[in-house]
Amino acid sequence: MRLFHFSDDPDIAVFEPRPVLIPSVRPVGREWLNGPLVWAIDGDHDFMYLFPRDCPRILLWGTPDTPEAERRRWLGDWRAVAFVERHWLERLEAETIHRYEMASDGFEELKDAGMWVSSRRVVPVKRTAMSQLDQEFAPRKVDLRVVDNLRPLKDLGNTGLHVSGIRLRNARDWE
Image (cartoon, rainbow, N blue to C red; front, side, top):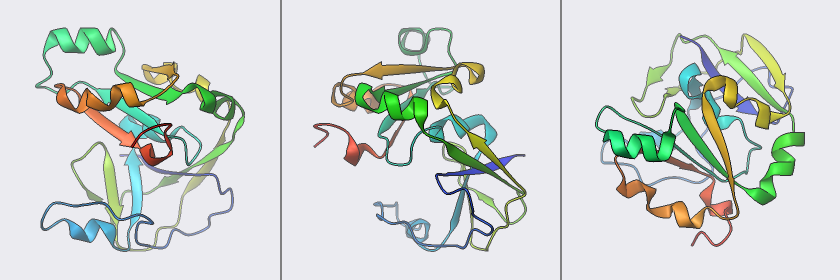
């Protein structure tokens, strides 16, 4: 199991548990996820974080319950799709981010889109600088789709696909 954390900071020697900056509404019994934690993503879902930090994006992939017609319509032959607004493309092509690899010891799987958390400090085992992020998707069988605005995709949650929205507060006309 490979776990990663992505950052624009190239000098992280230790990840200390910290609360999320903007708490989310959590289901009863899961409020602790807003508390001090170290977050990581597994290798199958790392494409969700191949973006500049504040870049809004919508990511989708099929689940065992996704109807085949919906899968073909939205994914085609791709494993997943990542939507990003056009005005972020230049930053996606130019910015460098850092992928920190972490040992899986001490992490708890959330069973939600490849996310893992640890309540203990974590020392990364490796750091890899990643540039030309737009080139990282196709080798992972993820289709990067550039759109003028993410708002028309707001209703994707009504499909049988898994839909993850990240940093949508930064999307144009989201509210």
